[in-house]
Picture 1 (cartoon, rainbow, N blue to C red):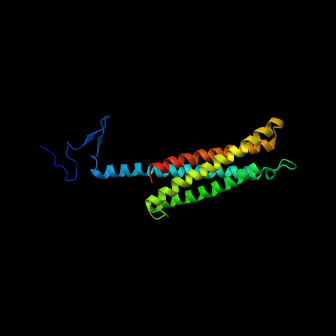
Picture 2: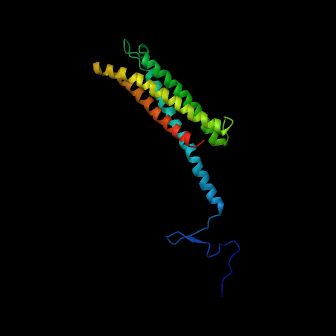
Picture 3: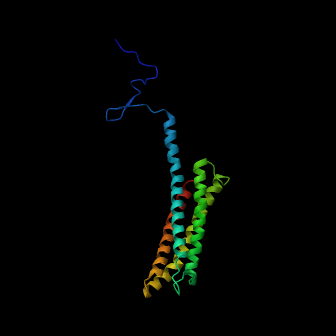
Length: 187
């Protein structure tokens, strides 16, 4: 005699075996593939948010370290235009990264972008990342030779702080540059 099979039980040929001998439920048709595709489509957006958050952190560190680099006498960042430029660009990069992190978080949370069309949003993302990355590399290339020259004469807390701020600006540049690559790939 055979036992009755419940109406909601999968047919024996529809159940899958996972290689260890355990039965698995059959995939729910296209729903599972849609969910997997949705998760993969969100990966670039999450990567862009992570990279912009890193850029925010590094640009904040660069501006804080440079702004606090005041040790009296000739060891004050305000006396060197290259350091003032690096500080100014770090502020611009931090403001840009703040706006982009908030915008990306809003886009991921609500599914809507603050900028109207998808094409305009992609253009703002890509062009903004490119411009800010250029500004950061420009500021670093202005400040690095001065720091190198001063370190040849005296290696002290002032030059170490300047080098640390330049390094943080470089890391912000890398994060924004990678964000530009992700932004250019997908809107």
